Image (cartoon, rainbow, N blue to C red; front, top):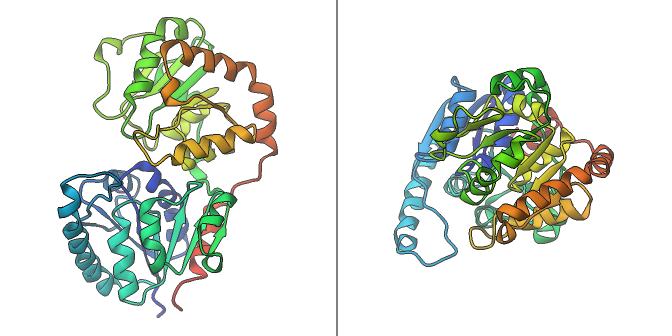
Length: 359
């Protein structure tokens, strides 16, 4: 009987898990035995275990890859080495046809172990410029897929190709009425969904909360503020609903929203695009990131798909100004989004991945 085992890896942030979350149902529906390798502390264990409780999850050691000086840069390589040996043990036992890596620090020891064992590795890069984990993994990968065509200039042409965006099917199954009901909104006002990423953003949270009296006069607000960032003094405020983080409820909340304010992680912004939601993007600054979200937001702005407010320019006043610009340009944004290329389905992505699998 042909072995139909696949291993998925990726984590650290929700952006490094969402594509895996999207394609797992397609793998399962096609009879594959799916296993996930993630980190012990990363958000991937929570996301995958909640969405797919039956899926085997193996936690391995993973060091963080830093571009700045830290004493941990001297100790974390040993964590990566430990992760390689742990991944070797798991992969030897499973003998998968292929390893699919979505990036993030935990993926590096997994793809290294797969290369040692002669198991094909396919990686995926969502941002315009490749992340550090994918750069380190590139020599061990059989192929790397990208969302942006612009990314291909940073990769070897002989083993890279652009798929465009891949959107999880359940995203389109969200229900506006269900989302509004979950938030207790029944006043007929337009709704803004505000997302600061899986860890939240103090800059965005403060700008929203300082503007709440003005905002609530015209909008309902769904605020995904990040773990540990709930403000209990606002729990009973009419028209305002805050969540630390949501998983299965997100599609309903997206459908309930008329506008979105968000970071500029590529997985998220392509989901907003697929749903044709006018978006105001506030990318992570260079002080907090390698600048990938800034580039993502710039391209969406240039293509007429989003409005952008840089984090360095974010104030109580500039937030409202940018939001008013978003509303003013809503019709033009929706028209551009309607003209955008349709995303790939998870089934199509699974087929592309399996083209590189062992027979």
